[in-house]
Length: 133
View 1: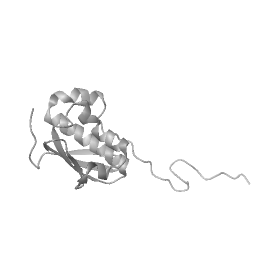
View 2 (view 1 turned 60 degrees about the horizontal axis):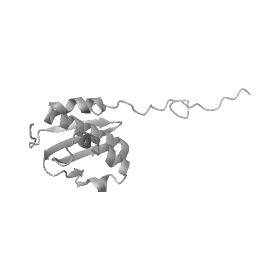
View 3 (view 1 turned 120 degrees about the vertical axis):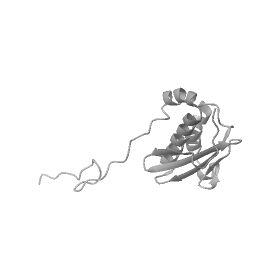
View 4 (view 1 turned 90 degrees about the vertical axis):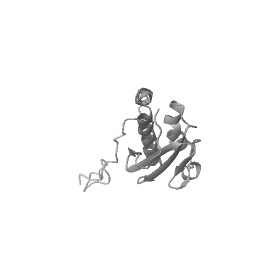
């Protein structure tokens, strides 16, 4: 199992419009997001659960200190981006972890984005009410 302790080992995770840069170092399981504590940045339990999924799946939740710089989008997209970045980092640390992470769908980038609004319509698909007369 390789250890990560250089700043060059930055792993990128993406979801919606969010981009997360994840740095993992040997440690005790402390997570910091944008120089704030994990619990402070993500107040919702669901977001924290999403982020911890790859760590709990691979039993690595107390082995590494994780520093994350996340930008863009909202909190749900940012949580998904952090999860994606952590999953990619874990796969690089130990190639044996690829199979369970891949099976759980954590290495796949969720490509769903918001569809743009079109001109002459009230939204992406919704149209103004048609009037015959």
